[in-house]
Image (cartoon, rainbow, N blue to C red; front, side, top):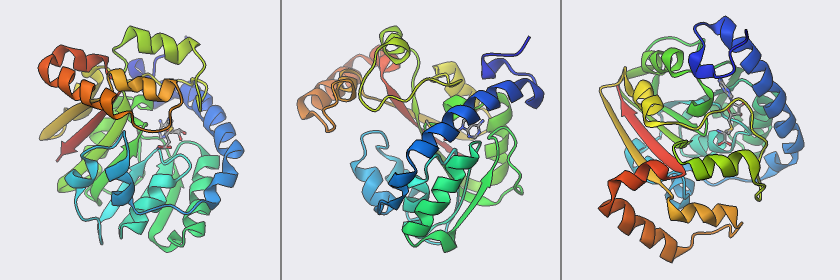
Length: 263
Ligand SMILES: C[S@@+](CC[C@H](N)C(=O)[O-])C[C@H]1O[C@@H](n2cnc3c(N)ncnc32)[C@H](O)[C@@H]1O
């Protein structure tokens, strides 16, 4: 019986049917969005400090000049170009070959292709040497990867003291899960094999690391996306800060989390 939940896979062989689903979906998405690779991107810190889904990551990673950075699941390569613009030497990979191609085109259009190296791979087995990276970054990707196989890979690839930062969707809010599965909203991509993270998943990712911090984001303010406002609604943000600080139990119902780990 093929495994449907990638978290239950025992081996890379169990993951093959899931890889096929993901490759088909993300190759098609990348194909449709190839024209966007002509856009000129800002540097990583400028973007991350304004982004609603990356709070704290710019400060945690610090100056990227001359750093070796691995990006996991680069997708269409926006972050890849931004990281390179911030002075990093970036290695980026994705399981979708068309996405990797889009990332290459974007890097060229942004004049940073000399600082970007690309390859097609799965996060459960990354063909690079131990201790190669100062930083590992990923956006919306851990919830596609088996943590039991992927977490030791990330840990192995980081130098001692290296840092890893991710921004990921959370999957502990039944209303949000229903919306993700059944309700159309602006800029929605169809569901693939991904499973938004629970606290257990986050804990599994953190196991090999010496330190892990998780910061949940967007409780009520998640409706900003649903209604397609396209910008922050400040009173909702303030209400979120108020509620999440006073009632920590609500944090599990947030839409996103930033996860920061150190080797
Ligand atoms: C939600 S998209 C995020 C892409 C990009 N990081 C971004 O922020 O736009 C998830 C990406 O993970 C990739 N992916 C899915 N499963 C993967 C795996 N096992 N290993 C590596 N990449 C994977 C997909 O091809 C897709 O590009």
